[in-house]
Length: 248
Length: 248
DNA sequence: CGCTGCGTTGAAATACATCAAAGAGTGTGG
DNA sequence: CCACACTCTTTGATGTATTTCAACGCAGCG
Image (cartoon, rainbow over the protein chains, first blue to last red):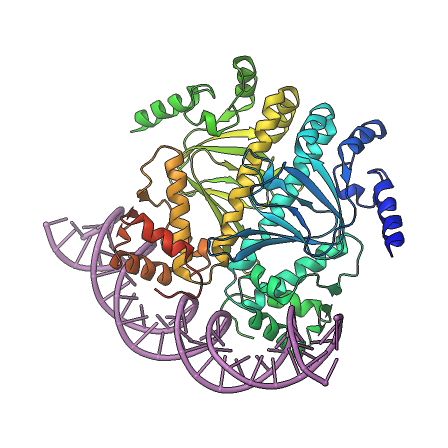
């Protein structure tokens, strides 16, 4: 078992930015071969992480950027009373840690949800390399902006008063993102628990459970534990875009 | 009257980054005199804007970064049914438009709430200058990260199930930000309507109204139209940090 | 087998939304 | 100066979606 793991890890460690399947989504996009080598030098590749592992903690550590290569993770802030607010779930090709580039360090915690592989780029090195590679700086801005835009989805979802719309928006967003990395957009395997999903959506766990049941009864979804199949994408879209006063 | 306006505008137009009171909060921070001139050249200063004026529209225009110098504005996205979700209110010293740096253009609309002065930096020029001034790139990252962190406040607020906590968190945040630009943190003049505030918090206008009344009765606030005086900051903090199951 | 962590389902309570109406501030025109 | 219209806000009465409280189901695992 230990053997298999090491082989997997070695494979992961050997992979360079040039080989990476996420190339186009990531920093190397539109960067030439020579510059790519320079970038490769500052990108640290970590052994696979397991559920519960922490990438970085609120307010601590050297600020770094992480790129999810495989798996998924969540980011959250801890509130005064000890409970948390989940800020996002992050899939392959997405950047995590942009909040830590300022002096104060990271403002949220990043925790792995399932077996996950990430690339780590210490921010200092990145800034240095970006200053020397003109295309990289541009690409970095583009990616930051992309992540910035993605963040805006969360409040839009939370702003919907009907709980079913929130869940529908979430599922659609997840579906789209999965499609973007070459997965079947209608077959979703949730890597987060109902509790984590409820927290993210600003609801309680029971409501999530009831909504899944209801959407299954409506014929929109087929739900089996963490596997969700979207049977009727149009109906899901309708639920997502439904105004707050339309009933269903 | 037209005379007075022109004088004000001329004053604004004459002001350089070096003179600006927001210097430390803005791009020029920690940039030397010579480089400052170069930055000054790409920063366009606009005549004062009035309530309802649009800085940029969703999906349109040359992407640019705006710095609020005086006044305030809101950003929002338009949803399918025609209603909007307000994403943020922006005070002097804050950056607006970071979502537009990617290829797709701005993903939200920025609209002025009151007489407002902004600086505009076309993103193309900024990237070019940033590549040549080492400190500027760093500072740009820092500021982007700062705005990124600020965005995280919105979902934290929306995640609270108790409406009174949402409003309390909002008021505290506003208070802090006002203090940061040298205003009295306990005397707030809201530049947004109840409707806009309700939308931002994911509530309806009647709830906002009732909450203001309640907080006034509790002795936490003194509310008079758009003027809010924080009488008991500790109580406000308590309301903000209150767990969702504590009653008040 | 019984334990434990998740998830589901039911019944009841409640906080917020909705519906409705009236008050307060502002501006217009007679 | 007052009457009128208009918008924004406040307040009250009622309804309802979601939370809360509680119990049960079910898979995984020692």
